[in-house]
Length: 296
Image 1 (cartoon, rainbow, N blue to C red):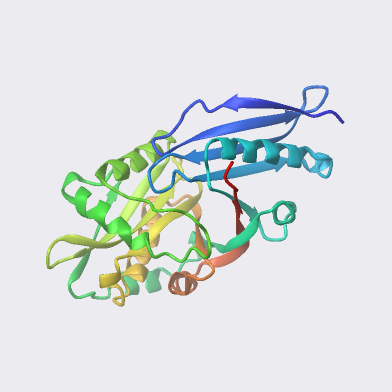
Image 2 (image 1 turned 45 degrees about the horizontal axis):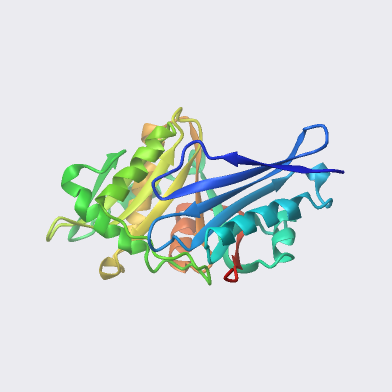
């Protein structure tokens, strides 16, 4: 079968990356596969690219995936990228495809879901209402309030030592501009961003935070984004406290939500323990792959 690759243009480049794309079609013009290559552009990550490749199940094994992958890797080299990241569900065709084409496994992510209808409201209330001396919880929707913007941006370093296996994910520098841009991007998609933060009462600074993104119509499943506690504030059960409050608010404010989704690195034992305690049940595992590119 003759397959043609057509390069596509990203209609909406972001502030920290832009995408290249190719569509594979057969002799009749029917799409049979695609690949998207995200090129990160901010300092600290501008050596990285990330790809997402899909081939229609009936067309697999005919070389289409290899051609799409070659086009993406060639473009990554031309853009002077040092590494390309990709994900595939463990045991899937994508898992086997990537492992056989120069990608190495660098991280395992465990995905889990909490069915909101099954949550123990009494247990949640017990966790949320338990005193945490020296701390209080605050929350907001969408963009962080101006009076908390700087300390919230500073608290993002809580994610710097997040277990990432052998992934070369570079460094992400957060400032107020980036925090606001991330919230604006979620709002532009029509989704709702809810943030819970633990505040150090001694100086009013944010010690930790957790984020939940809810579909705009309040239906289906919401997605946990980042959850982190600054190293100097760990050991006070703030992560569990914040996440329990996020669940409680989701139940109260979005009664038609089905569940909450989260993903956690296999090696992140403290967060996995919190998820287990709060009732999240594993659904599947995803493998993060990395392809290290040689200089041109």
